Image (spheres, chains in turn orange, brown):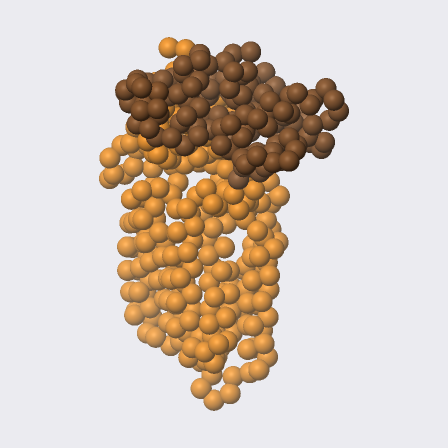
Length: 270
Length: 143
């Protein structure tokens, strides 16, 4: 695969790598939110920093372990992970090929259960961290709603930053993200408008974090592009083995697709 | 128009309809190894033909499924979806994703072949009209 050598990667949406990615993402996302909120709620700086360092450290190690590069060697696709063993897939046993960036977003998500799993675990971790802080300032019902909305904003930001170049924001429902962000922003502003009577630190932290993530979510939704240059392919081999291949640019994607198609033709004729 | 040899097609059709290799071997009175070899060969040939079809139609391959024998293409010039299915005993058949799906008398036979193949392969249920079967088939290919 000379034209995209080293630039093709395999997103961690299958097997043990998807588990590492989901757990790593949940620990780092939940840890970042929890550290920031605990700092806002008056915890000592050293304590907040130690939460942040620990969660980011563990999260990044797990996320790094889940990454892998894709190479093409003769008629094999090689997926080389960091500490995990190299996986080999014979192209002649390819039975299904899907260009996930060319199908509807809900079809793409259904075809990537690993992404759904990691998104769900990230959402749960960040929502739990937000809920911990919001319960100190708001009635339980409002705190739950605010925490879920803030969690959606935060995770949508993460997805945009981490996956957008390949899967594309056009594949995710921006209206859903936009509405969630707007609702979070309105909740944050309404807490701000109500003021901070008495012990107001918790309410200030709640209003500040809601307004912050709501605003960031709105900007994210408004800046979304209508198209993407990257591509994600799903390849299924006989025996049910499955890999995803992500290419950062259209040129890489075309080169990869052409190479795979040539390999399929050669495999059949040989 | 390329098509699979009869015996290979018979074996592939059974597995496309959801039979396991062992069940297909029992039904055809042969060994599982022989079935496995023929199914592999049939899937490789189908994948090759779908790729060739995409090139011939100047289209991008969006989806290829050699287990069930279909592919989804997108025409580079027209931007239209093209749905290709392997019709047993006939070869590859394509239909454009535009309304009407089966325009006029000329396409009646073409649509009937595709609809019958889709039902025979167990991809969709039998329906009152060929066009309805094809609509269901397109829904499956896009899902």
